[in-house]
Amino acid sequence: MIEIERKFLVNSNRYKTEAFKSTRIIQGFLNTHKERTVRVRLKGDMGFITVKGASTHDGLSRFEWEKSLLKEEVEALLKLCEPGIIDKTRYEVNVGNHIFEVDEFYGENDGLVVAEVELNSENETFLKPDWLGEEVTGAIKYYNSQLSKKPFKTW
Image (cartoon, rainbow, N blue to C red):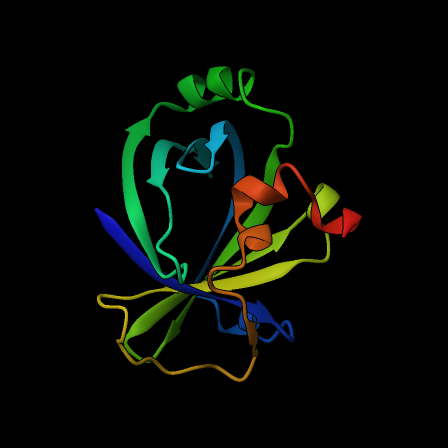
């Protein structure tokens, strides 16, 4: 239940040709308190509710709990969310022993592309593809919960 991940900006669209899967994601936040976030998400036709705790000081890890919901349940809960729905396509790319999730944002966050890699430990090594740019792990403005409040286009 502890999520360990590193986050990077993306410097080219080469990840698209390397992706083995892409999925449209619509998500909203029922709660964006600094100690916890509660989001609902439609990932294709699948629904989820996720609770995330506060990040560690370096932003590498935090508590995460997730359960499946029906698509209709998520559609109803999205109507209760705080303003700022996130709309993006997630590309999944195999790189070495890891899968990078690359999110291409739309709407008020159009132009932002961020890659994440989940790790088993905070000091785990991983291959970095040439399309990875600056590391933004721990930079709160890149959290989806913050992008819903202060979109990329307003920076």
